[in-house]
Amino acid sequence: MALVPVLALAVLATVAVGAFAGLAYVIGITLLGLEVEDELRGRMFGLVQSLMRIDLLLVTATTPFIAGVIGTRDLGVGPVELSVNGVAVVLLVGGVLAMIVGNFAVAGLAMVIAIPLGLAAAVYISEFAGPRAKEWLKVAIEVLAAIPSIVWGFIAITMIGPVLIKYAGATMGTNLLNGGIVLGLMSVPLIVSLAEDSLRAVPDNYREAAMALGANRWEIVYRVLFPAARSGLLAACMLGVGRAIGETMAVLLATGNKNQIPHALTDPMTTLTATIAAEMGDAEAGSPHSQALFTIGLLLLVITCGINLTANLIIRGHKRKSAA
Image 1 (cartoon, rainbow, N blue to C red):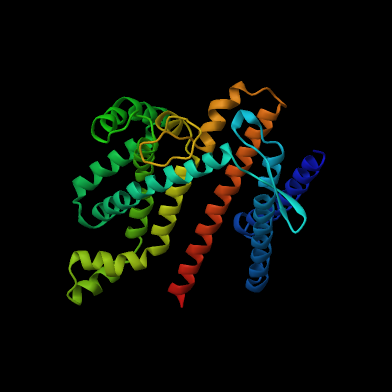
Image 2 (tube, helix red, strand yellow):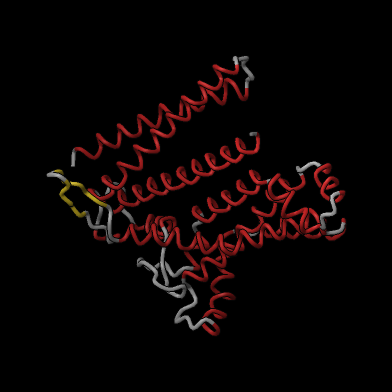
């Protein structure tokens, strides 16, 4: 057990070094505008990025060990030791695994709903809607974005749940499908706003050149605007994923908050964020239950950082291809 605080302190120290380096780079070069040669600037950025990747790797590698050691029966987390070449490895299993699966399941279902709706709405607002309709749609999107998550959870319980019971054959209205629908609707305004900005940022010369070649409006959207705005559209989708992964209250109310791996869309489930919100008030400070909840928070931070890093690498790769 003494290994846990030492390991945690080592990881935190490494993360602090990476965070300090990134903060110094942002303040010194980006905000203060210090004059640095392009080659040195590239090396500094590469160093900061390498430190961040090392931090992410360390946290990812040590979190399952720490969580396995302090796992408690309260959360259904059982540390399981496996022997690999004579070395005991503690793995994270049980309840936390169900939460991780639930997190990705509800976020994936939400993105299946949100990305097509968001991109379609962004294309319509940017390319097809008239001035008056564009104004009304933007107002509607802003209103949807301003709805608190607790209100979305209330909508899930009182409106979406009964519909699922009646038409989807669900035994209870709070389940994976309900959570996915609510999260998808919550993510649509964010995706629409960012995607519409990306489409409007494409120069009009692209549209005019495509029209001169005989392309219709849909061909302009598919063959010209989407490739030109690809980085912005990807960023919008990835931010939508981050919103779905980190949402708490709406998921807590809509999914049933049952700690199990869902095997069907109508099964109740829970997520990392919902578990923290539901159980933190009942956990005694310093108890194993409290430590397990904080470890879940650390695991959620690792997942979020991984998503952001992946999005950054994907967007930079597409930008390099476009530049080439």
